[in-house]
Length: 524
Image (cartoon, rainbow, N blue to C red; front, side, top):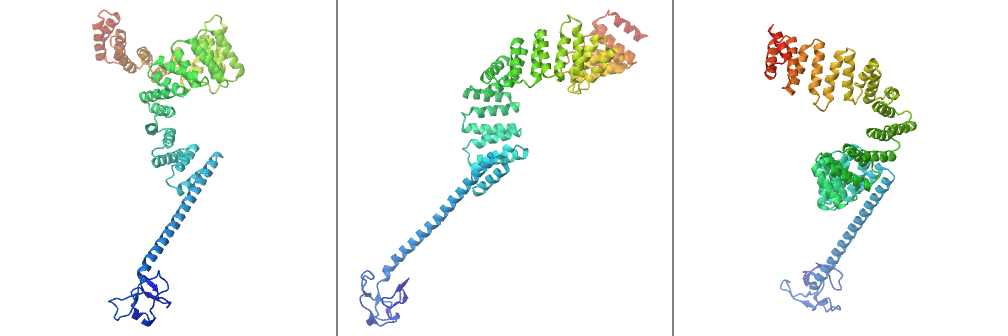
C-alpha cells in the first residue's frame, strides 16, 4: 500500500523505514490529525537504526478496502443497470414485433407477419407466443409447405411451454389438414391430458379417429364431447354417422334428430336423416326432410329433384310431376330435371298411353345433353324399347355403357337388346362387364348360363364350358346346369368329361330324359 508522508508530499510504501524516508529524525513530531495515528511513532526491530516509524498504515488498509468495495458495488450496479436496460429494450422490441405481426395478419399481409414474428423469435428464441403466432400464420396460408412449417412451429411452441394447450390444439389442427389423422389424434390427446374439460377438442379427436377408420375410438370421444356440451350439433351429427356405420339405426336416428333440433339449418344432418327415414320405410318423414332441404338450398335443382322422386316413391305421382315441373320452370336447361321427370312418367302406372310419350320426350332432352349420365341414357333406352324402337334403344344403351359412372343396369338392358338384334358377341360382353360392376353374386348362376348359351350360339363351346363349370361350382346340385355342362363338353369334343358329368347328374336324377338322351349321344 502507498501512504502520503506527513507534511512531505511524497509517496512511500507502507514498510519504508524512517531512515529511508529522506528527512531528519528531528523532523518527526506529533501529527495534527488525531485520527491518523493511534500514537506518534513506534520502533521496529527491522530498522537498521533507532529511527522512528509512523503508525498510520494500520488505519489506511480498512479505508482502502471500503473504497474498493464501494467501487465494486457501483460497478456491479452499473452492469446490472445496463443488463436490465438491454433486457427491457429487447422485451419492448419483441412486443413491438409481435404487435407488428398481428397488425400485418389482420391486413392479410401474411409475408410481413411471418417476417415480424421471425424477428421476434430472433430476439427471444424462448418465446412460445412468437412460435405459436408464426405457426398460425403459416397455417392460415394453407399450402402444404406452409402447413409443414406450421407443424414445426407448433411443436417448438409446445416444447417451450409444456403446460400450454393452445400449441397442442393448433398442432392437431395442422396435422389434420395434412391428413395425418393418427398424429393429429395424438396431439389432441396430449391436450386432453392437460385439460380434459374441452368438448371442442374431444370432438376434434373423434373426427381424427373417424378419419382413421377407428369408429370405436371415435364413439368414445364423441360421447365424452356430448357429455361436456350437449348442445354441440356437430358432435351429435358425427355421433349419428358413427352409429349408422355400426348398424345402430335407432341410436343414429336420435343423434341426427338432436343435431337438427340444435341447428335446423345444418344440411348434412338433414340429408342423413332423410336417407335413414327412407331406409326405415318412413316415407312421410323422409319427404318432410327433403322439402326442408329444398327450402334451405334453393339454388340447387337436385334438391327439388329429390323431393319429386320422394313423392314418386310414395305413389304421389301428381305431386311428383308438379314438383318437378315447377323446378323445370325455374331451371329450364337442367338435364337432371328432365331425367327425373322422364323417370316419373316412365314408372307411373299407364292409365294413359300419353304417359310413355311424355317419358320419351323428357328423356330425349336429358339424353341429348353432352353431360348426359349413364342413368339418363339407360332410362331413355328403356323408353325407346317400350315404344318398339329397338335399334334406337340399342344405340342409347350402348352409349350408357360408356359414360362414367356407369349404371350397372345399362349392361343388362343392352345385352338383352343386342341379343334381340342378333348381336351376340356384344350381348355376351355386356353380361361379362356387368359382373365386374355388380356388388352381389346372387344372380351369377343365371348370368353365367346366359353367357354360356350365347357362347354356344357363337360356336365357342369351350367358353361355354368355362362359365358352366363356374356355375356348377356355385350350385352343384342343379341337374339342369350339369346337363348344360355335359352338352357343352360334348360339343367341344371332350367326350370323357361329358360322360363323367352325365354320370354325376344321373346319380341325382336317374330318369331325367335330357340326361338319358345325352348319355345315348355320348355312347354313339
